[in-house]
Length: 208
Image (cartoon, rainbow, N blue to C red; front, side):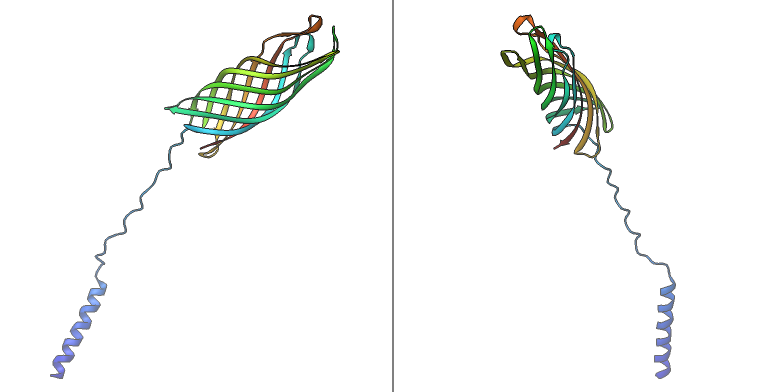
C-alpha cells in the first residue's frame, strides 16, 4: 500500500513540474487606446489686453501727434475650415499729443482715448492666423489755444492687418497695424486739425 501511495505522489509531482514548463495560455494585455489631441479651433469668445504706439500724419495746423496707448480687447471668432471670421472691439487710454505754435498762437493737441469696432477675416494655418480688419474708429481729441479749450469726439475708419498665434488652446498673442483716418475739425482763426493715425499694437488674448 505504501508503495502505491508513494508512486502516486511521485506521479503528481512530475505532472506539476511538466505543467509548469508548458507555455502560458493567458491572453496578451490589451493594447492601450491612443487618444488623439483635440484639433485646435479659433471659434469662441475672447478678452485681452493690448498696447503700442500711435502716430499721426498730416495734422493740418496742429502738427502730427505721437505717443503710446494701452487698453483692453473683446471679440468673437468663428472658424469654418481654414477661414476665420469675427468681430473685435477695443478701448485704449492714449497719450498721443503734439504742441507748438500756429496762426492762432501756442497750441496743444492731445488724444486721450481711442476706440475701434471692427470686423476681422483671416486664414488659419494650424495655430497661426493671418487676418485683415476694417471698421470704425473714434478718438477723444483735446485742443487748447489762447482763449479756447475744446474736447471733441472725432470719428473715422479703421483699416489694417495682423497676425495672431495661439500658444495654447486658450492663450494667443497678436501683432497688428491699423490705419485710422478721422474727420477734420476747424477751430478759431481758420486753424484746422486733420489727423490720420497709424497704430502699431501688440496684444495678449484669452479664449473661453
